[in-house]
Length: 261
Image 1 (cartoon, one colour):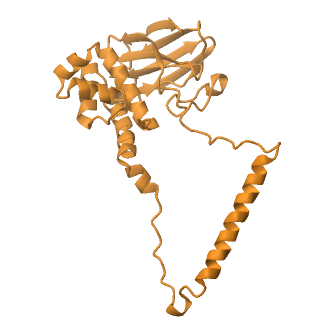
Image 2: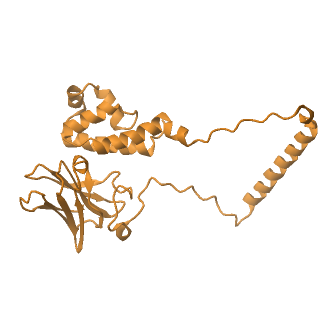
C-alpha cells in the first residue's frame, strides 16, 4: 500500500484527535453522520480522502471551529488529486520541426556516438563505486519533520515549525466565557504551547513554563473562529506548564496547569 502524503497524514491525525474528543465509537460516529463505519475507518487512517462534508461533520460533533481542519483538507485534497503537482509542472515547449535537408543525415554515426558515451559513463561510475574511500550517496533531506528542537524552538510558531503534527494534549479547560483552552506538548520538538478557540476579540492566553512566558491574543472576529496558538516554550518530561486566560470582557483570569509527560 502506498504511504499517504504528509498532507493526508496531518489531516488524518487532526481528525483522529477530534474523534477521540467526541468519545464516539466508529459505529456511533457513523450513526450520527451520513458516512459509514468503514468509511470513517478509512478516513481516520489516511487510506482514503474524506469528503469536505465529513470533516465539517466531525468538527461539529467535537465542537471545533472548522477553519483549521478545512485548511488541512484543502492541502490534502490538492495533493491527493494531483492538482498541486500539476500546477507546479512546467508546460512542455513545442517541438520544432527540423528542415527536410537536415533530417537523419547520419543515423548510424549518431547511434555509435551515443553507445560509446553510454559505455564510458557506465565504466566511470562503476570505477568510482569501487574506490574504498568513495562516500555513500547522501539521503535527500525531508521537510516533513520538525524544523527545530528544544531551545531553538523558543518563541516560534508550532505550526510553522511542524511541531503540532501529532502533539500530546496535556490538559483541556472550558472557560466561563465559553472559550476552550488546551495545553499541548511535542516530544520530538521538546516544547509546549497553548491554544484557544471559540473565543472573542481581545481575549488573551499566556503559557508559562519555568522562566518562560509566551502570549497570544485574538486580534479580530475572524481569528475568534479559528484555533489561535501561543508561541512555543522549551519543556521536558516533568516540567510544570501553566496556561492563563484573560477574557476581553474582564471577568477575571482563569488558569490551569499540567505536568509534561
